[in-house]
Length: 253
Image (cartoon, rainbow, N blue to C red):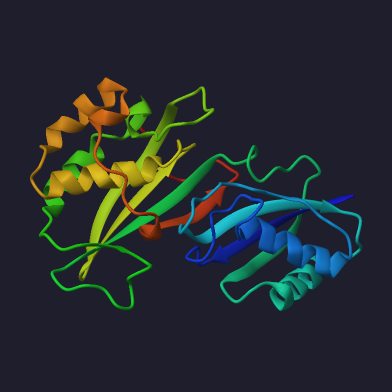
């Protein structure tokens, strides 16, 4: 059996998330159906992250094992011939036998995109969260920087969850403006359920003046979901990259 690492890009709009479900379309199911069409047998895949319904990916990673004797470039070409148009295989490579897309990961980069303008979105209506009120980017940036480091992020985790370890090491928490877009970037060794969306929802409250930037430490210390802000809509979130080696990001204490 050969292990392969697959990198995918997808538009999550019409999918009920990554993980296969009984009566709903999912990204995992679509990829497994494409693999089955190629290999004429079921090939299960494992994803690096279980993105929610409506969440997009620029670099989702999946792994699968098979005894079919296709080269990586043949798998790549065949997958893109069978996948639906809103899912694209970007690369396929042979991986070590013990490679696991989820458990071998050392870090993930997510971006959240906010369209901050007074007019409604047309082209970005399913690609960014439109916030009509002016946002104070400086205050949001100060609040985001307070989150850096290793913390218990229970306040930003949506229940219910089977997760027993709420501690994550957030190494990047940055915001930048690109015209009407505010792009929020978060890199950590791991993320809790809907953690990025709740971080963004809380930062938007800071940007609107509903809470102070200095409140972020109080929110962290509370370790309680009601202490944080709303969960931002799924369609603004992108899984950008999954790393499997130590990243070149300055360490945070």
